[in-house]
Image (cartoon, rainbow, N blue to C red; front, top):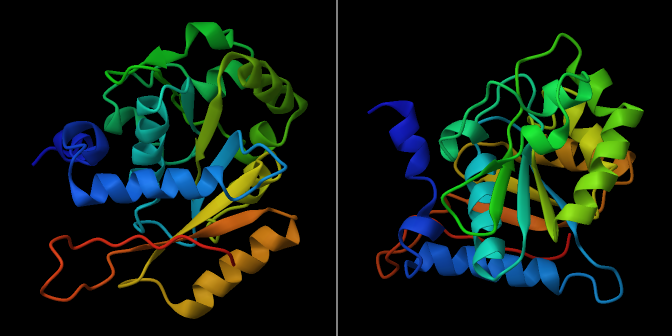
Length: 230
């Protein structure tokens, strides 16, 4: 099956909003909203220790649930090394975040609408030679301020925490971080290492999503999400 088709199938919240897993994503959204009584969670990052843990799927479906609630949502692909959000939402990646940070386009020209009402995507754009420097630049801070005025919710997809420093840089810009853990793949010590790295840069870890947890025969879905305090 072509990857683009597979990626579109990741958007279960859009394709089958009544499915149990769609309800789990809505529960995740609600838990995020109630995780901070005094502080608004507006800029949110979804992270994972390693690749292949379901991070992009989680952040994409979470973005859809916010949009379905009526929020004006932007999901941003800050994986400037191996981007994938443009495939999930079937938009062009000819220009994107790297293009804006390099001064080639104003952001308004690279924001793209999706098939989901209220949901836009800022793809990564062409792979640059210096992703970490771009993400840690003053231009990135200024861009985030501009986008925060345009949207109710900003969601970041990032590279794996243990692979490069990019995720830690982005976490410092966010109101909160959700850590996705593939219960059937990642080792506990790697999860602890990723958590420690995020805490080292004072990232606010809101909770954990357990992905691919084995369920008993009475449960209909092969996914289960748990969300809670550290």
